Every structure is written in structure tokens, then in C-alpha cells.
Image 1 (cartoon, helix red, strand yellow):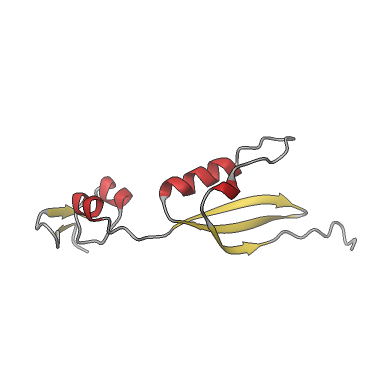
Image 2: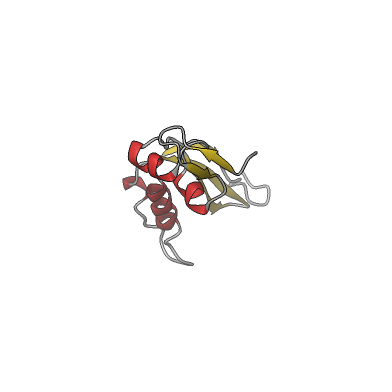
Length: 111
């Protein structure tokens, strides 16, 4: 894959490996300025969060509309410390669950 491409909107040169381009997103042949101005970034942001329950951790895969929402969700989810009650603002942040793998609540064969 070539490192440099021409922007399909303005014709400027696009460095596809530039860290700013990777963070901003957009199509491979769009420059950073055009992606921001035109709002063409449509990628879904995913995060995986793990919660301990039983003998196996529960894993949730969550989708967000923006990187800010994703980061805020993870920060809120991880805000509880050892021995403290889990009180967070996850329900106030816009998200949708994509997948869930629940933990095994059965401890030492007891039903």
C-alpha cells in the first residue's frame, strides 16, 4: 500500500501513516482537514470491558458513536477501586452492547 495518496476532495498529498491521520480517521484517500471539515468519519468505536464475577470474568463489547464517549465510559467503568461499591455513570453515556460473555456463577460445583 502506498504511503502517500492524493486527497479526493482537495487534491493535497495525504500521508496515510501519519499519527494525526490515524487518530482522525476517514477514508484512506481523504486528508485530515477534509475529514474534519466534511465530517466523513463514520467508524464505530468499540471498547471491551471486563468485570469479575464468579470464577470467570464477564466480558462486554460496547459500541460508541465517538471516541470521547468511549473513553468516558471506560473511565467511568473502571472508577471503582478495590473493596468499593461500583457506582459509575455508564448509563448516562450513549452506548450499545454488541456482545457479552457472562461469568460462571457456579462456585466449586454448587448449583
